[in-house]
Length: 211
Image (cartoon, rainbow, N blue to C red; front, side):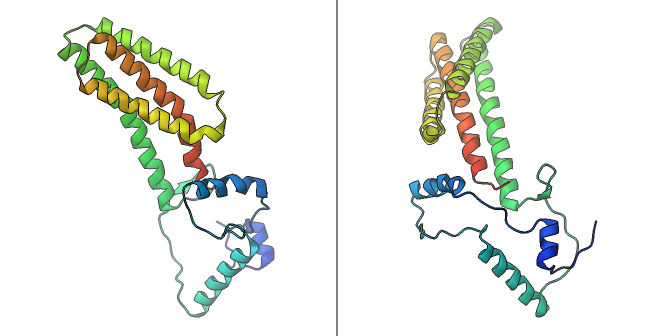
């Protein structure tokens, strides 16, 4: 690892890539609109943005003052590392990714376990009926994929809400112990809702993390 001055000059900062990149106001406007829509109160005509040179200069001034007062220590620490971005990840970014992974795992495993248990143990049917439901699930996924590619991103939250509503409807139908045909319909709805909302949910989630 190349050693650099802990408080480098502007030339060194440029070399190691610490200066903020030029940003396009058009790329920031959608983020501001999202925050405004969820009720965030801020001075929108002059919003806080860490990309601004004034913020970077103030941060380096604060670090310099802390160093001058002997408040900084140099050492080694285990950190989360992103091999794609070549940078350290914040703890909250790792937590978000872990929660997302667990959520996806639960979304895809829970329905399958419920399906097998209900058809075989409750309805007393065979694996043939299970395969019929799986076929309906595949049709729902294909149809949702086709539709999701033709929906504009401005309807992101509407689609996410629709997806969760269909999943909730699946849970309600299965709670009522329905006959086989309603099971087919419920699982079609569940997979349709998941597949339809998933790309919009992912795009919203990653829009909260800077690359």
